[in-house]
Amino acid sequence: MKNFALKGDIIYTPEPGKFRCHEDSYLVCGDGKVKGIWRELPERFSGIRVEDYSGKLIFPGLCDLHIHAPQYSFRGIGMDMELLPWLETYTFPEESKYGDLEYAKKAYEIFTEDLRRSATSRVNVFATIHREAAVLLMDLLEKAGICGFAGKVCMDRNCPDDYREEDARTSAEETRKWYETVKDRTMMRPILTPRFLPSCSDELMEQLGKFQRETGLYVQSHLSENPEEVEWVKELAPWSENYGDAYDRFGLFGGTAKTVMAHCVYSGKKERALMKARGVYAAHCPQSNLNLSSGIAPVRTMLEEGLHVGLGTDMAGGASLSMLRVMTDAVQVSKMYWRYLDKKKKPLSAPEAFYLGTKGGGSFFGQVGSFEEGYEFDAVVLNDASLGTALDLQMDQRMERAMYLSGTEEITAKYVGGRKIFERL
Ligand code: GUN
Ligand code: FE
Image (cartoon, rainbow, N blue to C red; front, side, top):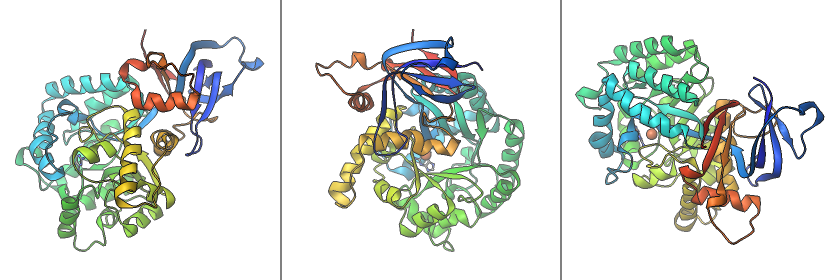
């Protein structure tokens, strides 16, 4: 891949607390990586192609650490329940349809096209239990230019007959077959995906742990999202110290198995300490936590304790695909946490939330989510000119406004790993 540059108002967060701004500058890409940012193009880059986005914001591609592709069709409906009845009533019946590849294709095409046009460049995505549909989802995402990890979901208990793998052995075997098909992919890579502890028998967890040790696969799942779920896990795994420990006993909680856990709303001190010790990422999904009345995750505490934290939509727990929206949701719920739960926990600022949605979560994928030299060239161009104001704004204010106000129309172009995958002409 040759060198090229984007010209515009470049903004990113190399550290959590503050935006770094380069007005009217050049962001140079070489071999899919960031080379640097300059006010004037250095001599050695003279003559390279320049894409002129003057006056527009350019920021790192956003990282959705937790999203369910097969739930996209029912986003924005069925918001009247908490997690466990919501899964039974809306989620499992919809996901069971993906055994039909024609339906899967129709639904996943809608999902991937909308994702391509969004500001998201990297995802950790859940498919369904169906091996072929999971491969299809990976095909479509790669064709759309999206990078990240995708998982065939594993579940063999506590779910309806028509949406359950027959037994632990079948689930593990299907997972192996799926892995063989997709193991050499470089854009959408496979990730081990036990749905959550209540839907995976001990035997299945053992087999998945063994498979993880053979392959080195990363792991994604759910953790401590809802009070009834947490109580249920205590019944199902009485031998565990906490929900996270239950995964850990099977070797599916970080360490050599790099792991991301969605939610962590009810992760107590001990569970968080284990997350920290094992390097487990928390995918904070504030909009989902509001819609399913789950609660508010102790994000400030996690950050103070030095945990890895990123953001996720948790589609369709979250109804919006927009990670800019999720950033503002994270700010807003942190204010309610401060107001109602703990006055010592300062709410998140806009640049802190932006950091979580870019470099914070991005590190799960490698050098992702920043414009420092050597980072993957993931960049979004956003036209905030249509977001009218009489004010003469600073760049950090423009970015904050874009987080709160912009929709899909403002996204002008997107690059992932140096490839332009979307442009609004
Ligand atoms: N826990 C287990 N499965 C799910 C799911 O699909 N969505 C959410 N939000 N939580 C879960
Ligand atoms: Fe989820």
